[in-house]
Amino acid sequence: MTGTLTEKILSRASGRSVSPGDVIEANVDIVAFHDLTGYHVIEVMEKANMMKIFDKSKIVVAFDHLAPPPDVRSAEIQVNIRKFVREMRLPNFHDVNVGILHELLIEKYALPGQVIVAADSHTTTSGALGAFAQGMGASDVAAAVITGKTWMVVPQPFKVELTGTPGKWVNGKDVALKLLGDFKADYFNGMSIEVHVRNPKAFPTDYRATVSNMGIEMNADALMFVPDQETKDYIKTMRGKEVELLTPDPKASYQDEYTIELEKLEPLVAAPYSVDNVKTAREVSNVEVDQVYIGSCTNGRLSDFQMAAEILKGRTVKTRCIAIPSSYEMFKQAMEKGYIETLVNAGCVVTYGTCGPCLGGHFGVAGPGEVIVSTSSRNFRGRMGSNEAKVYLSGPSVAAATAATGRITDPRDLQ
Image 1: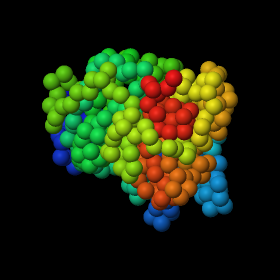
Image 2 (image 1 turned 120 degrees about the vertical axis):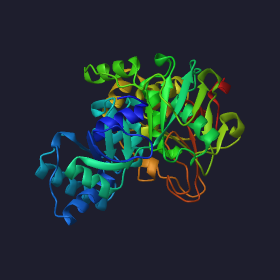
Image 3 (image 1 turned 30 degrees about the vertical axis):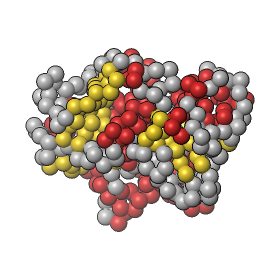
């Protein structure tokens, strides 16, 4: 196989050489859903009278969006999905005590070169490990559960290169917001973004997962990091597994190329009501804030909590602060390193493994007129609760600094 990472993965998955624009039928390596979408996937299967699964070992189910359930309807849905899991004898089921689906996929399942589909738009997160990962609707995911196949149009590959080393308070969120600010939210429609990291250790997998997660906010079909030594080390650490890397050819042809010099980035935010309304944190530093949320499948990993704890150590929050590591594994590691204790001592409310406030589900829904700073992925009207609330998106350093002062704060400006 030759070509870009996109072309190599989809050629393998379809069993033939592919080019951008081709309509293909691809074999899938992982199919996943969660509590909020799983109900609809099962409903489609039931209505089609096709209650069968192509390969039980390749199905992943996790409860995360409304977990633990905050109301009777959510509990009813989870009861029904648990019944489905038992009847189908699915081995890869993660109940309310394990974590957010997208985090679990990169911790436990996703591998370089795979095709992953799931009933959630942020499936792109698994691109952090070099997988072609795409969110789909319930009908398409149900078809993939039954057949192990899906159809897609081969996207146009776009190359992004990261050079240098990010500054102390900069992480993956700032790279994602840089791309959104420069290209806007609809630019990458019909494209796959392939990110090449010049210095792999300068941009760890935690950061990559944040950027890949927000690939869907850029309207990209997929956002993949070209696998490298960092990828191998992450999978070895998390799973004890050695993996082979699938990489693009050095002279692969891309629709266009763009370079981000990491050392030139500064802490960024996306102001209401769009992910591409990007400003520096200092540009909006006079905005008073009612609640800070640190977590979600976008920024709920260990390095995010390390950054937040470093800022909040010895301080007391001046506004409500909710902190939610994205999985039990991330929570345990953050607890062992003292990050959880630091956040609790600062006055944060801490739990783990639920989407909760990210989608306005529970555990911190935004009220009318409130201003929220969130490390999650979206800030349109009503995303986190009231249509009258305003959500600013940021990385963990800006969020923690904001919690410490009660107004949007660039962490470099803290005394």
